[in-house]
Length: 193
Image (cartoon, rainbow, N blue to C red):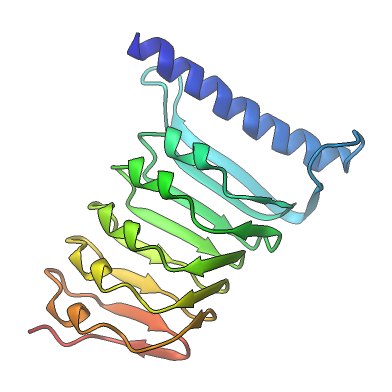
């Protein structure tokens, strides 16, 4: 049964990727489809082992003209380790909470989008997260202190948002040494207690 579910997820994902590539190539020939065009240098890639384990482990989409939000179905890729959406300025809305279902996620780069709302507190549930880049968005509010609870976190970039407040003191008591914490126009290396 699990094999059937994984196969269904894989085909749904491949359909989604095919749809994006097709609509990017067709320049919106069908009325009612999302406004999608391919730009020079556009890249859309997914990596995984579809023949043996039916797992998608990496999803990278950048420099593509898509008008949408990050779909909550991204949480239905349970083996995803890397999620990168970059320079897609018509991606709007908030980061979906379904991302917390991605227990293997190590790398998140959601940069140069138009994401709004706060930096989600629920990101602290991604215990394998090592790299977090949410730069060049419209995120507002303060940096959640709960991010310091991530035991493997090595890199955080939150620059070019509308964040307020100071860097939480909890970042000084991280279990790992956080070499890079980039917010606003400053690069910080928190002192470990």
